[in-house]
Length: 306
Image 1: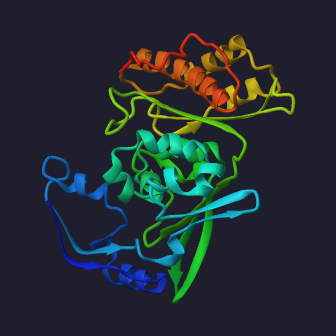
Image 2 (image 1 turned 90 degrees about the horizontal axis):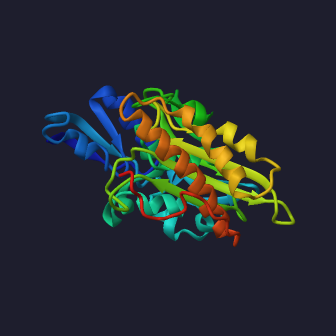
């Protein structure tokens, strides 16, 4: 059970940092709180009590989605539901809508925030591979002598391990910026018996852009989670595809390079097989979004590995 003495809803960064400074480790910062409540229930963390819960969901600086040239800024409080509904994200971050379909259920998507999913640092986090594939950078806010300070940390350096990040005590995630991926085909694959409420055994996010003639790969982004301690980019697969023709054997060759990325000690061979097939299928599905049909051995939509 989660209990607390005070529930605070600061309306500015100054108010938030005043509360954080006043309560210190005796407080818990939340936005959607979709991870905190299950963690605190009996059987997970047992009874948890805080002097204060500090809800930062109403702070303007942590909200909103904006296109800034070649980059997209997502406020830390951007919900997973926005991946499906916000027109800027649908056009400029197309992989996120595929990710959102797999993320929990409608009610949780309305509450869960992007920053919360990243800060939770689960090896199986759904949003992290998608954001990694778009070269995301986090802006972190802190306060010193009454002044708000910021620092930037690339997402691939932010997550250190299960439940571990570079977020320092007293810091807040302010925003996440990523590349605009307008014009890319996108796909997201995840093991599960159903499309939501499943913790990933393997999940893959892919983004593909072709050359002007629509014959060769011009840019490919692939990231994976749940096969090691941190989500990661499959740079060797990306490099293999660069400039090569769009052919089934080329795609399969790239996918097979991913097998050695599996670091999990449990169900290792299972994860290797699923990862290779998912990489192949995610590239194929991303191409399909661009109107390019490519047959593959793993193109069937029935997932038999779950």
